[in-house]
Amino acid sequence: MKVRDADILIVPGYTNSGPDHWQSRWQAKLSTARRVEQAEWSKPVRDDWTASVVKAVNEAERPVVIVAHSLGVATAVQAMPQFQRPVAGAFFVAPPDVANPKIKPKHLMTFGPYPREPLAFPSVVIASRNDPFCAFEVAEDIAGAWGSLFIDAGDAGHLNADSGFGPWPEGSMTFAKFLTDL
Image (cartoon, rainbow, N blue to C red):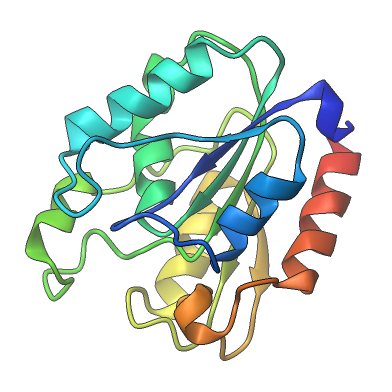
């Protein structure tokens, strides 16, 4: 699949992805990419956030490829039962452990628990060994339950601009390969 053949939905996490974040950079470079906007980036409400993703998927004109980061992963996965349009694949980066009672802020737990059934489309989960929002083993277990290709990003923090992942060329190459394989 080529970029022009898909509606690429960028699904940021808690507080959105700023201009230096790899998601914002990809959105600017990929001609068919658009961000799923949320009314309240700093006060996520599961039903509102999932409704935004459902609307974006169901309004798509081409097969959808989801590119989600952090709480965007939980949002996209929780929205899936309401999708009426085909999803070609999902590229999930740094899923948070929404079942962890120590997660901050606490209301992020309302996005869990994650479903444990295999996803109906190809997916990739990329996780860091030192992500403060999810233990590596938890991310690996989630990916296994979903039937996702699991990629170990090493010690990469939360894979966001704050941990040095603005341009993220390795991520771009991995996404390009994923898209080609769809």
